[in-house]
Amino acid sequence: MSAAIDSVGRVVASVVACGPLWTGRTLDTVAHDGAVETTESLAARIYLSAYDPTRQRLTGRGELGVLMRAAALTELLHAGRLHDVDGRPAVQGPAGGPLLTEIEASRPRPWTHWVGRGEKAMWREVQDGLVAARLIRLEPRRILGIFPFTGVVVLDPMVVHRLHEAMSRILRDHGPADRADFRDAALVGLAAAGGLRTAFDRRTAREHRARIAELSTVAGPAVAAARKVIKARQAAATAAGG
Image (cartoon, rainbow, N blue to C red; front, side, top):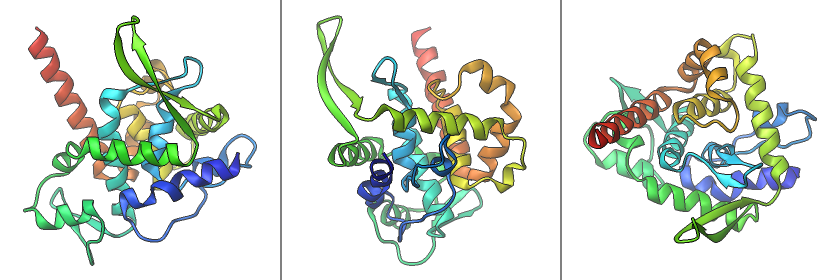
């Protein structure tokens, strides 16, 4: 169990290119039995948090690419590889890695721009890493027995259960939000931004709206950018359908 969760970040750490692996007291180390080691990659954790173990399916597929991009940018920000300049990410130090290289080569653009692009590549990198780590399995399925799609099965559902439990605990914690680890804060904020109902339902999100806002602020601008991108896309879809 511990080895499985620890391998998540080690397989996909290259996705965010944020230097040496970080280890600390994060969501996984405050899980129910305290026996889970740190998950290094925030992008992998938001992917796993979107999984519904009961129905054995991945939820939030339309938003997950944006959330994983925001997760990668958040890690780079807190690793000191990016910093915020007037609402735009700027590379600090040598670029290294495709995401940092792309940002450095571009004119200054807002966080929403970077959160909303490169989703497919991010999806492939994270998902392929989880498959290689034998944490998930992909299998062909059909909707209504007709339309093909790729199903996802998490091979150890307890990884997801403990992740969801820890997210719920952090959401309900009465301690100062600015003392929360940024990864914990970001995971809760991103789940709320994407409307993921696997860790907490809509009613819980409403009841703890202030706490979510505080945690999102701790996480940084990429979380707020993800919320804006998702809301804009939903509004556009509604307008097109109306």
